[in-house]
Each structure stands twice: as C-alpha cells, then as structure tokens.
Image 1 (cartoon, rainbow, N blue to C red):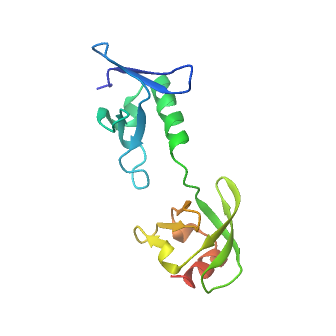
Image 2: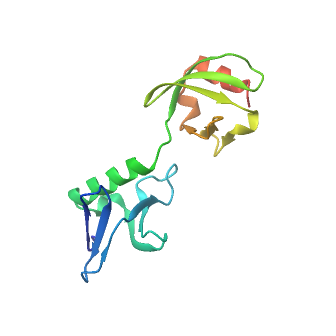
Amino acid sequence: MKPDFQLAWDAFGRLDLTLADGTRHTDVRVVRAFPISAPDEGISIVNTENRELVWVSHIDELDPQQRTHVLDALQQREFMPEILRLESVNSYATPSTWEVQTNRGHATLVLKGEEDIRRLNANTLIVADAHGVQYLIRHLPSLDRQTRKMLDRFM
C-alpha cells in the first residue's frame, strides 16, 4: 500500500507535505526510527511540534519522486560520518587525537575519554569527538587489521 501524500520543497528550501484530504503542512521534518540498525524502515514525517503526520513502514513504499524528497531531507538532517580506517592516533591515553578516513573524506577528531566509544552491538560502535560529532563504525570486523588493533587499545 503506497502512502497517499505529496512532498514538495518550497522557495525557502523547506519541505511541505500535502495529505490526501488536501491538508497542507509547511516545514515538515523527516526522521528515521532506526537510523543505524534499519535505515530504510520506519520513517516518520513530523510537523514543527514533532507530531507525527505520516508513517512510512519502508522507503520502498514511496514513489521515486517522494523517495528522492525523503532522502534529500534525511541527508540534510543527518550527519554521522562512517569511519572506514583509523590512520593514526597521537596517544593511547586520553585525550587523544585521531586521524581517520571516513566515507566523507579525511577527518581529525579528539577523543576525550574511553567512555566516548559506545558499543551498540558486537559489530557496531559510535565514537563521539570533543566537538560533539558522532562517527559510526558500522561493521568492526570489516575494518583493516591495523585499525582494529588501534581501536582495541581504547576498548
């Protein structure tokens, strides 16, 4: 069953939602229910008061234009670079400065303490830097040996 609504960007770059009954909501937000474990499932469109207006069970339910609008909105909202490789650390004691390669390019981050590395499950970690940026390590076993060895010193 395809959701019955329309999405469009207004002249100010805000996303507007028009429901099947003609009700229009301006400046809506698109939010993932499970951004890491199931990014394509459970997508909510909420108003400025964070009240849910539309629930999409799976992104594949959307037609191509709606899917494009939803993905564009999510890309603007979400910023969680994925660490692909740990190139170097200046110290194994915290605070330490890490040079990493991410899916968005090279980055330097400062790890304040070992508690800033959170394990979500056996293979997934979130690393928070001193500036509040969160980096995702999606699948620990798929990282190169040197990166895993350096990470082991902090966990």
